Image (cartoon, rainbow, N blue to C red; front, side, top):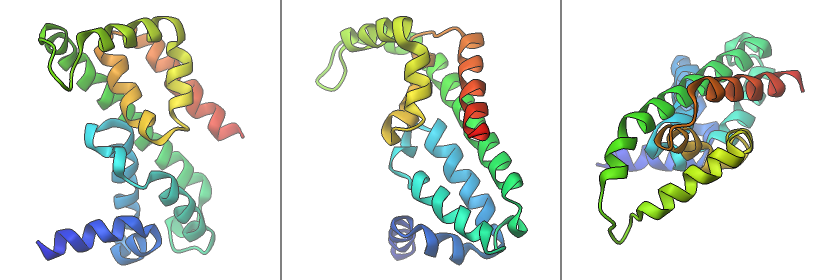
Length: 167
């Protein structure tokens, strides 16, 4: 139990987390980016601060031997794969959610409102969601739940990643 608590404490300090992982630092970084963008529980992970710290470690040569292009490519792939998994999860759970009765925590009308929002502003939700930590985790899942067209979703994900790489 103590080890779990210490790991949770390390999540608050991304530099210590990556440095303590040694040769597995890159794998941990990519796993966290994947989880933050595609897994329901990933919203609490420190993705933004990890990106900043990984850039610093890359600049000093202790992460991917200082190859920033490789680091950006690997992080982009992890984020895209996370988005796809989130969309797939939402697509699989969507029919179940629409059949549920209203409870204290769940209202069908909110899912229908999300569907209307995605029908009108789906592109904005996906692209802007990349820059808002909690939205980043739930945008692909909700896109799958409400049935956003997969081709449109893929286009938005890749155009968003490509625009980020070009800046």
